[in-house]
Length: 254
Length: 280
Image 1: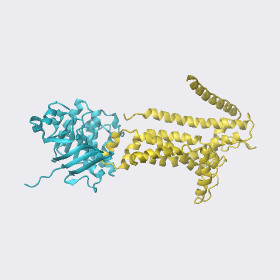
Image 2: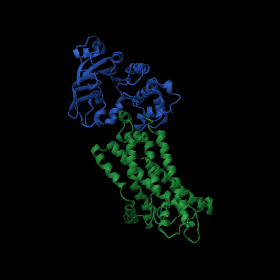
Image 3: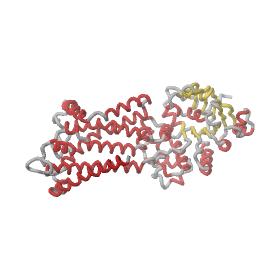
């Protein structure tokens, strides 16, 4: 059997905030077009780890990594990699919806515009396609020129997902994308994740165990900077191997 | 405590009162139409003309030059300090910039007259010894810290999440700064510019020293002009008898100036109020 090609991999990854050792020797590999959930108590490093995949930690003073992060078998911390190019390949959705204070349309096409695409027909086509993908088109098609800030929180978050998709990434990182949303909006975002995994490799950080169970194929449990357990979601939730995992998912701490 | 507040209010009211009452006396002798439409301002000459336009033009000219200098530089500094500069560097450079604002304006005036004008003359033939250009440029330098400091505050108060969104989309620093941060901070930046304008409109010493004192209805920056403020200085320093019509011209000029700065301050106040915390 030939060696399996993974979409995303971390090899012996260590990360530090100054003297603080935030991630400790993490090894993980994710297949293409799967959803992987990162779970664990607050401060366990799951968000930090997520942000190493698009190098969002680069701007934090004193942050450094050792080891490798591979995207399609290329090391993204290589000096030759351009961060702005990397982030077009690896999109991100944040915890709090953060649309730009611009119109809905301008938000969606932002990624294309910074790539120098100006043709109106291309932008309009992309806007409709990604808004449909994000299940938002029907709600906003008549008010594309209205401010994105006038949308509800749930709509804003789906707009942010559409915005991320417009740059045509292959990986989508989601940092607790539903934690600031009401249950109905949360359900919509979860449905959306389920749809999106047909085309994208998705990594989602979540505090919500049920959510991890509902949306993900694989789950990784982090504890104080370590990857404790990584397996198929069903397996982990039914028969966790490590006692710490077991304690966490049964709600004994966290 | 309340006394000092009352005193402040009383002083303001009495200033406005003096301005108004003296102007009313002025306008009883010179019609407002004449004041606003005549193209010459020669109240101190035998052939008296009372058109405020040359002074307004001079004021607008120097102010425009000043803003043209200060806005791009000030905004670039603000963006640089916010997006690029190391935090230590920012901590050193910001107070240094603010020192620019503490230099007495008379020093700026002499700087304009004795350094900037000769320098400009070396490559702009026909530049008069007194001119609006060098006064405007130096005035611009003076108000740079005002724009850079207030704009920097405005940009740094844009929520972090917007910067993250921009970076997360693959924006470069430049795209993040000018495509997202500056537009998001635009209301604060506009306020800083308006305050800078009203500072420039009211600026006296630099233009009195370096721009000449010749009321002239022109937009040519290379010749001597006079601004509203310099005219007032000229008359108060001269031997114009109190209570005369010539003397009252300064109140008419003063109230024009007051209308300008009052309007600008109100606009900035209004913008601030309307757009403040819009993104929270």
